[in-house]
Length: 467
Figure 1 (tube, rainbow, N blue to C red):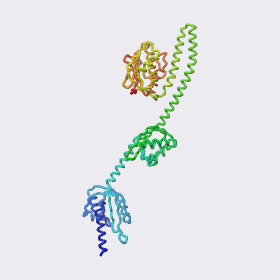
Figure 2: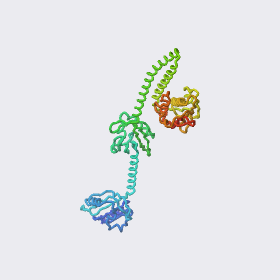
Figure 3: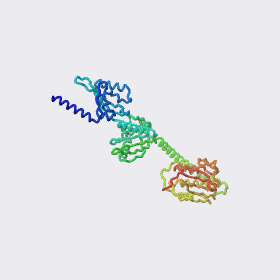
Figure 4: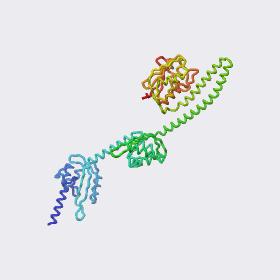
């Protein structure tokens, strides 16, 4: 009798536990007919106990799974094994929900299966959240891949940036697959021994919250060293710091710059040699011409002297043109009126007049700007005569140099900056070409148009005003 009372007590305790369980629970016979449901089942499915009991468990099927899914489920539990997995069921209202389900066979003393017990946890919100995260992850990956610049997102594991995400441009540029890079140290793949110290310094700066912009050399999967403009931006999430890095390949640009610098140096050396070799015999000829002029009075002396002067101008212009190929690396505030006036004083201007209509200061290389003014003044006097008036004035984004001479025909304006182009018999054809070189070296623009007096007007734009 005591044994029976104990069993009854255990059964009541079990039933109370099932009744108060937070998870949906029910059990069925061997054919799937529901024999019992707990209150959580009613809350989860919307089926009251009196309607569910006696019905087949397939009332919960949503149609999301095919027959093979259920065949495998039944094969598992009829074989005496526990089935665990996610299942999409349907509530009484027709609403679908996702459940983490466990179905366990129950056996009697002989080991025969007598019924099945199912425990269900509604994970619909969790699944929706996971799917949303996956969509956001896919969206983020698509956004990264749409950027044509190589990008990598990494998280720091100690001192190492560990790759979380790369875009197509990064994988194509460096030649590594996403599978190779994912979860691995970025520096292990693209940093060699020579640049490891520099890479460590960059990592330390980013971990300290500093953005890094610098040129770096990195390795590709093929073993090639490429030069990149690296921008590493720290992304702080609480106590963790990620880094979003962009790598713009500037290898070809730098090689072109180095090649241009070599060519410019070679050109300067050539110009220096040529000018020296030409000046020496020219000085000898000029010296003998002075002796000749002292001994005889001949109209040919002035003709020869003019030829010598023109030759000297050609030598100076060739040398100046060769040196103007270098870009301007450093600028300083330069007052246009003072610079133009100093340039004017070094030129034989005769009866020409300089009119200053500006008080602006710009960022420029003062020496080259003085050469620009000098060449434009010489051009004005050469074409307009000794009585020409040259005006230097302001533009919204630069300045202009104008004269009241005969001007430049519209059909010739596109050619005036070409080396060797001249419209006079005694012109060298290099003056305005040098102006173009000086403008280009500063990153400015120059155009020629007609002045208010009908002469030539040279407009220099894209000029930075000194602060």
